[in-house]
Image 1 (spheres, helix red, strand yellow):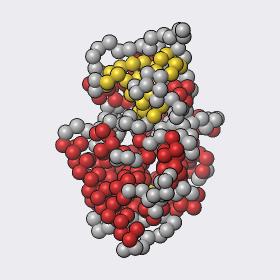
Image 2 (image 1 turned 60 degrees about the horizontal axis):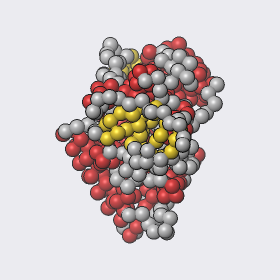
Image 3 (image 1 turned 60 degrees about the vertical axis):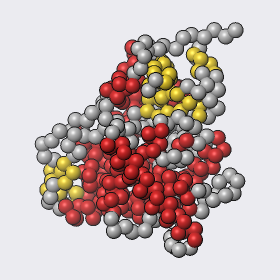
Image 4 (image 1 turned 180 degrees about the vertical axis):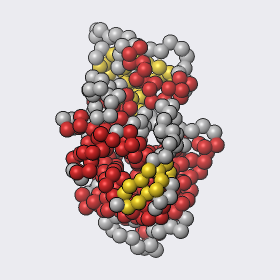
Length: 416
């Protein structure tokens, strides 16, 4: 009989409150406490495995060991992801649905996103020249416009409503009380509108560019050759729109990094694309974005002497893995140059999830995130000048998403 060791386990009955209090650092704090990168706790009354690290991420993204089906809490599905979307699929169904997303991530379409991002920032600065504005709030408006135009959603008179509704889906995804219900209402309203749009496209009532995501998703067929249910298409369209707008969190942190690490900014004035990318990657590694991702154990298995039992909820620490000193030298220092030597592992740098793009669960929009942020960084460093008034740049590690307290104010903005 195999020799198993007991997985370290928290002793009290439930650690949901501790998770809420510690947020991004909940798992990271305990890896040293238990001298283990794998341990058990109990969240919302359910036994839960927690994991952190490169090897652990590689295990977590093994599709033979872990399943995403029924892993995300219901309240998160009803706000952040939507129900029956790609994040909750496994196997051939996931691969086929993921291919739908990857099919619109062509170089041509990604280049268009870059052009739209530059155009929308130019328009925003023209509106606010020499005024003070809040970078995070303006980024949400800019990126909503980019997302709607790129996906080919027909022009809306009430675009500000879309800004608010799409923001609700990620700002209040894990909220409790009125904010949670507001997020659910925003999702319901957006899904209903998109579902009708899909029906209009299929009936020929509305004509849209056939090369754009809206048409491609509306006409996508599942493994049995059937068109996707309009409600599912609506969910997946929001899984394009919402993440683009959520990049505004990174935009706020990018502008903070420009202000706080001026010695690194000098490299960016040379307009070197690699330097821009190193800086953006370090922003994504250094600052908090999403704390962890979830799955369930597919079948009983043993790994490194630990038994993983079928059906057990499992959390992989994204933020902690990006700050793991076993893989990152001086992880709490902002050093873009580290990415010159980074080997591109899909398991040690996982700000938006890990694994492979084609067969795994790595975010299909990661390339787009990098492109949008590179254009934005270049715009703020090389295209405009501005002043940064005194403000509070601190951010909480127990709010999801974490945001700078001031949301980053700038003033006296001028085009160079």
